[in-house]
Length: 343
Image (cartoon, rainbow, N blue to C red; front, top):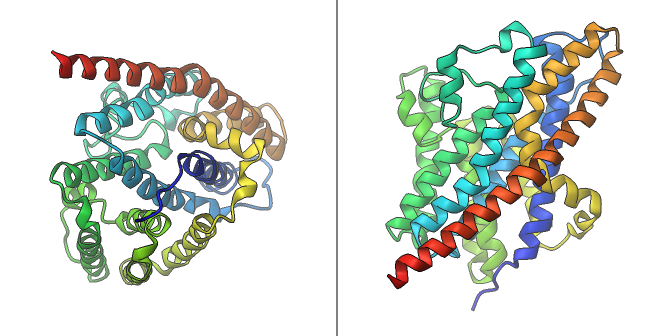
């Protein structure tokens, strides 16, 4: 018998980790990235480059959570409805809010043609050849393609062979890395659909889920984690190996029950708004920072004020759109799927 992960451990620690990762990305964008792209009117004198890699922690969390979700899922449509309700309502409203800010006080280079704006509603605008309304949206396409691939393995009944699937992923990632190193051509469509630049991080998340719930597999899962790290070291710039090692360290603390301090109120709140914060922070934040700086506000004060505004907007989006929409859509689906079964 293997121990099952408790729902509470996911809701609290993993959501708190997602919140911390989101805040790290915000810090990177408001300090380092904004400074590189536009230049603060009075340089901050510091940045937060490590925050750029918060998205890699997101990918580990997704690997863990999506595998856990699929193990508890009855049908493919249950999973589709669950993911749709989690992602799209908040995303669409966040887009409308971002458009409202960008097209009133935003900078000219933030404005997109109508075609690109419309394609942004798909969440896969990049592969359709459109620019992102908000630069952070690129990770959402990566997440969707991961969900689609995991749904395929679920539908084929192959999740029980996840270690073989991960070996395939690692082989493909190494092959892609070698192609890049030797400046050879690789299909853009294939690379994006198979998320070859990111798949080992999702694999690590899945392996930590197995480590967390199946102590009888410990040796195998530790060996596979080591192989994933080797693949990252071979396939990608060396910085990603250090990022992966850091993420693995965090997850080792989590699976060994050493992140209980993240159950505090601040981390619970941060975790609850993490998705909305991620959706709203960059384009709106850049427009606000620029507008405040142009009115003579010191750059550091502009960054802090923008963070406060964006956190407030994220909380509003979370509790008035994201969570109510998710509950209503899932309740509607449960009711209708039961009716279909009894018909």
